Image (cartoon, rainbow, N blue to C red; front, side):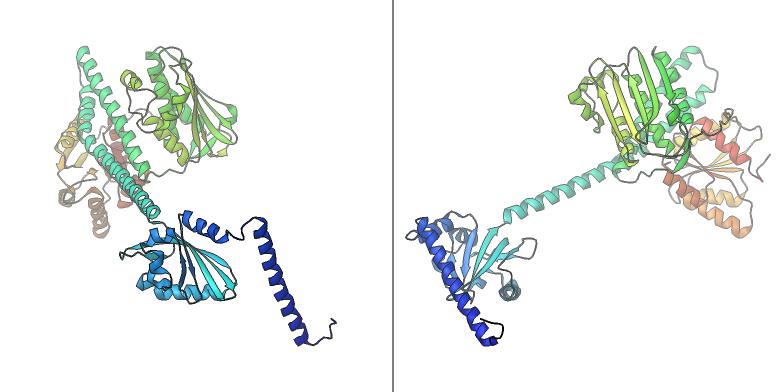
Amino acid sequence: MSVSDPPKTRGAIRQVLSQRGRRMGAALRRALAARAGLNDNLEDVLNGILNISSEGIVVLDARLRILVFSPGAEAAFGWSADEMVGQSIERLIPPALRASHRKHVEAFAAGEAQSRRMSDRSDIFGLRRNGEVFPLEVGLSKLMTSKGQIYTALLRDVSDRREAEQALALAAAEAQAANQAKSAFLAAMSHEIRTPLNGVLGMAQAMAMEDLPPHQRERLEVIRQSGESLLAILNDLLDLSKIEAGKLELEDAEFDIQELARGAHATFVAVAEARGLAFEVAVAPAARGVYRGDPLRVRQILHNLISNALKFTEAGSVRVTVGRSGGALSLVVQDTGIGIPPEKAARLFQKFEQADASTTRRFGGTGLGLAICRDLAQMMGGSIGVESAPGEGATFTVLLPLKRIARAPAPPTAAPPPPTPRETALKVLVAEDNAVNQVVLKTLLEQLGVAATVAPDGRAAVAAWEREPWDVILMDVQMPEMDGPTATGVIRRREAAEGRPRTPIVGLTANAMQHQIAEYRNAGMDDVVAKPVQVDRLVEALNAAAAQPGVSGA
């Protein structure tokens, strides 16, 4: 045949070749079947496949009438093959979905694809004999035969899988809700317990400023230490609840790592000496400098690790090394304590976990410190790990990828002298609704030579401010009638409207996270003192307020 042959001739030739190809293909299939010995048993083989398949197999003609209805299909739909052969496939489809099903089949018939998979993620549902609608996963194929197009559908009932997925999703939602409820409970309890704890520590501080016989001062010290231990546990619980609720925010500030390390040494050196332990904190030259990050949380990680090391070391030493590793700031705390079995080391960073139950009985603790260290390190993009063996101590390593912005340490600043109350008598308004806190604050202020008047809520505090001027207002945050930030906002707006001088306002609160302090300052507060109130911090705030222009003696 040449290129000059007319198109009709070429078409006829292609048709002949195509028919010849089909005949050759059929002949080849027959030959293969014969070689396999299937000529006489082909129907039996197909029936065997239909019978053993757990999926339903349905074969349809071009008019979507059922030609084959396998035992798997019988089990899924509840109809027998005798009842369904010759029936329309729509008998197995929920009425509301039949129109869309016809469109899908028509599109599939007109398309080039010979097979497709219809996922149970789509609205693919079957209708059982008893009227129950159930989810399906469908594989569909088409084939042109001498008698026209036929369709084969492989059907799988995915009811059990869908129910399992729904149960899993429900369990996950319930777990999340329970976790949120637990976090809310921990936050609420931490806050509520601070009120009586403020009374314990506040009065302990007030009594410590008086002349006491040695045995009474010793007993008072026990009260103070016990109260501060309880406060440390509450702080851990509060941090944990905020981390789990996603409400703990990291500060972005500059800090000198050497200064932070010196502070850690000063905090724990007396504890180490009391236990007869050598205690050293060293900063490698390569790590010195000014970093950008959250110094409060870096300090918290370091303090937790040092506190743990001292607690679990009865003899020997605790050594802290601050260095750099792979471009990250590294904090390494090494002790000669009781050590940890390798199989139990991973549990250390789980909440409320310690290596052994006897550890809690012997050394105390909640098992929260290391979990919080892990969470804080991960929030900073870092990690924490431990190497240890029983009786050979432990080495904890924290890597924090904090940016170093200056290699030279920040200029040393002279430590400020401990704050003392100003000799000038201040006129202080205390806005506080809790009776215990009222007594504590009045007692501490009286010992500082400060006269205080109490307002039981924010509305009363605003009324007292309207009646007469005050040098300082100590404003509780959570109060009935009107809370502290609202009362502060009212006072600031009226000062501006009436041209009155600005009254220093110091917030008093158990909620003293960075973002919360920012909110209080935005409301108009000049400073914030956390509860339980520490005397030196209260004096520092009063002195700062007294130094403002317009305050008596300023």
